Image 1: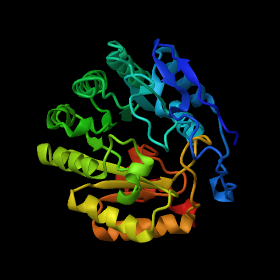
Image 2: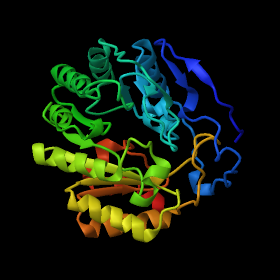
Image 3: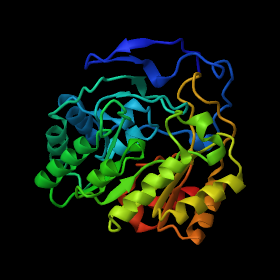
Length: 325
């Protein structure tokens, strides 16, 4: 992995940004350890992959699959699924684990995006769709109404499709949370990302461990029928004791579903990898969490928050059990 100099860009929407979200910093000359064998993914590109790509690009949609350099893109797109990223490709925050471009969109929104995503869902015949977005601190409601509009159009064109929304924290605004959880979706997600001690080291300074817990708790208070979900990435320097404490905090705030995956450093400007977590350890964390009371935990080296999201309620680690044996 090469050191990448600070790169300023202007994207297709005319927004100025820092490519990959991070400038040169104190982490840039820290080498990354060699990937273990269990993290080597064989890419497969079947006709479905190209159909999804055509839908995404023809409608000028963004996906977290591309913007976050997700290692599972070939598997998911080849299975005919994608995670749509709303409100552009430029985030107002700069978390040290994330490769999404960062900048200030100054209120820009694509007003046609909600209906275009709904049409893409219809064309792809999706029965389960995951929506996520960049943080939009430049918008008064953080983009909550845009999310809700997208869900509304999806449900109008695809009444049998279940929707999961992985959202920003909206700075903890209850009104924005209410807009989201009462718009007709089935699953509300907000990622806690890491343990409390590492939060300010890893996440943008405007994010917060307690703030994410509060958002998840508030969503359940407002609409108890909506499932709540969050995600932790491992390999950033956390301890087993801290992982268990995070699980306890999530259970105390009535979170239903947890995903656990390995942190993969996007560029040399991002937070270094402190350790590779083995498949056996991921299975151990899953067993610990299930005993604590989660409805389901999807845990494995390649797991991401929206990975195989439609299989979560099968309660078999999203069909990863055989892989771990």
